[in-house]
Length: 500
Image (cartoon, rainbow, N blue to C red; front, side, top):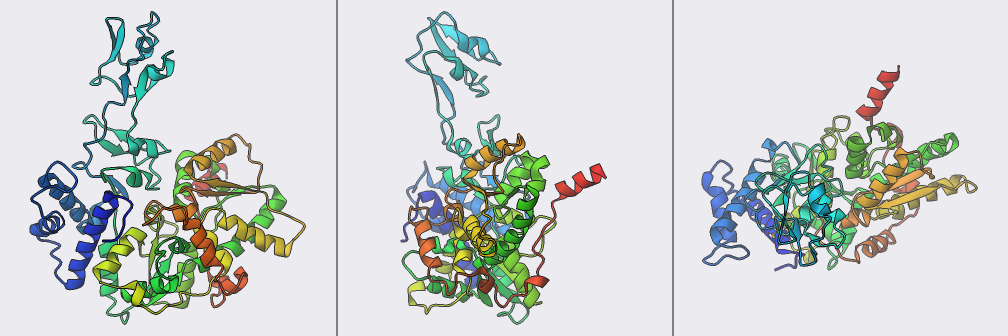
């Protein structure tokens, strides 16, 4: 058995592997009510439960996961809660401890909006049936006598999109959610899941008739270098091709495309004293669009590397279909946005990729290495935090060594939020904000197989194997003048209409 970071990740892997295995064997029963149950019984054979109170609950949750895979087209949202799995977190967020001194002030009682606090024998008590978890009592207690136990999903969500309903179940506020997947990664019971395109991707490959009907390309995130440490990258690319792809292409080539386009834009922006924020992280872009729509005009209009290389592929091959493979759940939202919709057909994650490889019994160790293109070393470091800034600075300094780029690196959503608060008050002292929602960049993506400390180093090591350090050579073979490198934000267009 492969080592997984948690049993939650392992269960997710087993479900994906079994469903994909059924597809490869031709034994899929998508319309059979028994199919989900068969998968659940295979994963949880019994008679004893593996992780929860009983095998019936475990199987019920597995069946829900299988049904989500089978009916992905029916799901409107990218991040969802499995209600059956969400029931074992601490539900009393604020509790009075022994530190309560029964003071005369009773500030906790006075600030409570719902009269949930009563004083009995000189000690405060919180009625959990009335408490709305606002935290006002904790903030005013002079003895720190009220403890707070925050649910992992709520604590992990920096944009406050995870809430608790009347039944004490977690719910996602879709108006705030940026699909970063932090809640999925942090939930210890696997109760929060992302929409999966595994079966859509497999059907796309299958219906290509061995790529004679159309050509299915796999575009692989630069963060792939942080995964699969026991094999060579060329063997991973070969394994992906064995899944039935026409060709495997590094998205790092798209990184080179973005570097050249972004450097050109920023040189003009620096002259005009107009700062820009990077747009290659869809979770950050979504955060700005939902929370600071008036600042969207500061988002770079240069597309992400995923979109850039996919447009390049489609420009060269009119029969192309594209499946992106990466560590990001927000990429699944990006491909459906109206101004870039249809460029990438589906997105699958590294977690899902591992399940597909094992379902088809592909042994990476036994494969000869395969090249997935020849991006520059700068294109490959897009997989980690700081990569885009280093790449752009390299190009700008090559052209104008006397003029440097003032940049701010926002490594993780907390730093992104802080930067945008400053930006909203006009306190940006930089030309460029590199903003990434995941710590360490895509190497720390929430749908990665591993999140160890060596991920960034592996990306840097792989970048050193590039045949060139020049992004201009990295895009060789693609006609940049024919590739649309920009996108249109509807918020900016609406602002233009408003003032015209």
